Each structure stands twice: as structure tokens, then as C-alpha cells.
Length: 570
Ligand SMILES: Cc1cc2nc3c(=O)[nH]c(=O)nc-3n(C[C@H](O)[C@H](O)[C@H](O)COP(=O)(O)OP(=O)(O)OC[C@H]3O[C@@H](n4cnc5c(N)ncnc54)[C@H](O)[C@@H]3O)c2cc1C
View 1 (cartoon, protein in one colour):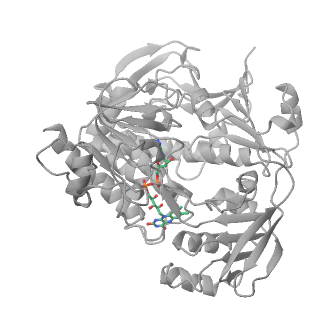
View 2 (view 1 turned 180 degrees about the horizontal axis):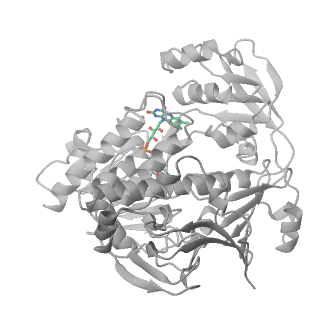
View 3 (view 1 turned 90 degrees about the horizontal axis):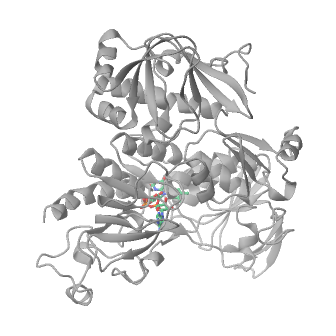
């Protein structure tokens, strides 16, 4: 039995800022006329449900007469999120991605609407500048409001001390998926919810997906499946280009490829953003003088890629490249092989780990590899250690010093000058709560719990001072390991020539002997960024000789597309 809580104010209007007109714009008559050309004008009955949460046929409705209620459905109960009036349109970012909506849409009274399908909407935003700006701004701002108000189809029940909770929070955040988070230790009522869904504290984190399905400590792939992230994407037809990895380089390839008319599919093993997504603030990327968080930069790129029609499979990693075939075929986690005329490998790099036996026990439960807003909140008022002397370590230390009581930086070298930018060194020197300890390293991690156990928690580390040879204990719950990264090339199974450190060799770096051994079949040499397999390119951090910066990743991702066109015409 459904109860509409109409007596309460609409959820999205409670705190709505002065940006109301940007979030819910009213289209002019001439804009409505252009919309009509992309959709179907139809009548609606009072009470008719035009779209439901289980409906995977994504579309937008533009109200001509009458009104549509946008409803959040939770546990059989409806709450009005907002009401769409004449001249206004429904939809938010999910619509751009062709995903199931987060809400139910019901006609308040009889009226007339223009119904626009996902494909027609993409055609519209790609061809009508003015409407594209209005629609995209509204979709993005609506998503921001939904996230800010925790309005979505997901409730996460977790604990800030659980590694699984942190992982799920990051996965949802990086996918920009709105969700409500309830912490076992802080929110009254969590126990009632757990009881209602018959789950125990040991199952934490628990994700209540679409108000009905209860997932206990789910993998990222299970979450993606439950939320239908990939269901609108066909994996079987041959694409012009398959991009592997959705970090800055892969997203750049997707934006340029799709905007130039190529059929682009991106495979991402986790969530979009790559290493850049875990950067608290990128200050050296052109055009952002006050800096931009890595997550913000890459989520904009993700939206941009989808605006041009690129499709992105989430939590679907490439596990092998069938290099003997043309078209190429890419094996993926739990799914059919993906065929491709050309391939752009953008799988980046993975953080180096500390060589300590029980490290895995504390990963996500005191040991972290990125310092974003989520981790900064965990350190509020407490001590943190940052290990590493590169720019990422410097950024993390300065960022964490804003919330942590004290940040200890540990480096094995004698100073930072050889490894860190001067501006960061100066900031560290001027931040009284950061202490730099040189020629030191962590040699032991201590705390209760076992690997995979939700109660595992870092409490203390032991630090070796190489000058004195002494090992001393240090009580700390948060250690950020920022010691560089190794290339993610293990999945290639020897299909492509790598350098001594495992990075992919491209272009003129490939010697004639290597090309002969790899049976390079063409009379022309490999193009810039092309690997030892014709039509397979490598860009960004995974490529030997890359600069390991966001700008070079983006530059290479976009440059590779110019050569993809050449290969497609060969
Ligand atoms: C904390 C931190 C701060 C940084 N700060 C800065 C900065 O301020 N300025 C700057 O210029 N640079 C910075 N960098 C470096 C910059 O982030 C990287 O150079 C850049 O992200 C590299 O982009 P990429 O796309 O090549 O690879 P990555 O960012 O590593 O992305 C690779 C993507 O591929 C996915 N993937 C891996 N394997 C597979 C597979 N088999 N199948 C499918 N997908 C796969 C990964 O999940 C990931 O999303 C920072 C890095 C870190 C870690």
C-alpha cells in the first residue's frame, strides 16, 4: 500500500539555493518547439505513472500542460522530490547515461508532454548548443542536489572503522551515485533497519539497493549490477575503439573519440577517475588556477564522454587481450568478450605497497592509498602518517593537515628536494602541524582483528630510524602510503612488448628487433603511442616514458585518437 507524503514539503525544495532557475529551468516557446523535433508529443492521464524505478527505458518528459510529480519510492512509501510544471523537463545524469532512473514520475492531472528517448536526447545535446547547455547544467546540478540531500535508491549501513564501508562509499562517490549513509556507531535507528532486513552487525557494510535488495558486504561488481550501471550497454558489437581504463587518459580518449564520431566503449575495472580521482587537489592542471579535486575533474570528464555518446562499463575489468585476432577481442570479468577494431590501453598504475606481512589486514582499516574528503574526515582531530616524498605525498600531507591534529611525513631519503615540487615543499615547511622525518620507514603494523575481519583496526606502527638504527612505537590509526606506482600490465599476458619495468613500449621506443620478435606485420613503423600490435595504443601512466601527470595522460589519450582514425582508414 503506497502512501504519498504530500503534506511534507518536496524533498528538493527544502533548502534549494538561489540556483533554482538553473536546476529547474522553464523553456521558452522556441526551445520547446526545438524539443518537439526530437521527441513524441503525447497526452497523459491523471495518476498515470510515466516512468518507474524498475523501468530501464531511460527518457525525459517535457511538460506542455499539467504537472508531473517526481517521487522517491522507499520501502513502499512515496515522497515528492519535486513537481515539474509547464515548460520544465524531467531527468538527471542517469538519463544521459541511459541508466534506470532513481525516481517514479506520475502525472498529477491530465495534460500533454513531449517524451524524448535517451538516444534522441543525446542527438539533441550534440546538435543544439543552447538546449545542450540548459539540459546538462540542470542534470548535473540536480545530481549535486540529490547527493547533498542523500536522495537516491541506495542506503548504506556501515561503520567508519570498516574497510568494506570505506570501499563501498568510495565506489558510490566516484560513480557520483546519490546515497544515504547511516553509521552504526553514530546513527540511532541503524539497528532497527538491520532488524527489519534481518541482517546482523557482522554483515556490515550492508547496502539496501532500490529499497528492496539487501546486499551484505557486496563487491563493487555486485553494486554495479544491482544499480543497473551496465545494463543498457551492448558488449557484443564490434566497436571502432575500446578504451581500457577510465582514468584521465582513458576518459580523454573517450571524449575525443566519441566527439569525433567514433563508436567508443570504455571498460573500467573499478570506478571512473583512476589515480587522479584519489587526489584531494590538483593544482598544476592547466586552466584551474585555484586547483580542482581529482574527483571533480574526472567526474566532469565522465559526463562529457557520455554527452558525446561514449559508453562506460563500470566494475568490468579487462582480464586478457586476445592478440592473435582481428578484430581484437578483450576478455572481461564476468561477461562476453568485447570485440574492437582498435584498442587504447589506459590502465595506468597501481600504488606500491609497504613490504610488511600483515599489511592486507589493515588496508582500508588504517592503511590508505588516497587522501580524499572521505579519509580526511576519518582523521579529524587525530594523528596521521604520510609515507612518501613525491608530489602526491606532499599534497596528501598538506590536505590532511587541515583536519588532522598532526601529520608525520616519513621518507627514506635525506630530503624532499629531489622528489617534490618546490611549492609543496614550501607549504609543508610553513604548516606547523606537519613534521617531516627523513631516513625513516615503517617496519611493523599493529592492531586488533584479522585480515578480512570487520573489526581489524590499525592502532600502532613501529618506525625504524636509519640514522640511529632504533625502532620506536608510534600510536596512529591512519597511515597514507604514497610511495609511487607500478604499471597495470599483468593482464596483458605477454601479448605486447613491455620495458624492463613492465611499462608498455610504443612508437619509436620499439626497436626493430622487438618488432621482428613481435611479428609486426606492416611495412610502416608503429605510430606515436602505438604498441607492438597494430591498432593497439597505450596512453598515460601505463606507457613507458610517460610523465605521470594528469596533463600528459589527457594529452596522450586525445592524441591517440588521431592515430586511431588513421588505422581505421588503413
Ligand atoms: C594521490 C595522487 C595525487 C596526484 N596528484 C597529481 C597532481 O596534482 N597533478 C598531476 O598532474 N598528477 C597527479 N597525480 C598523478 C596522476 O593522477 C596520474 O598521472 C594520472 O591519473 C594517470 O592517468 P591514467 O589515466 O594514465 O591512469 P590511472 O589514473 O592510473 O587510471 C587507470 C584506470 O584504469 C583502470 N584499470 C586498471 N586495470 C584495468 C583493467 N584491467 N581493465 C579495466 N580498467 C582497468 C583503473 O581502475 C583506473 O581507473 C596524482 C596521483 C595520485 C595517486
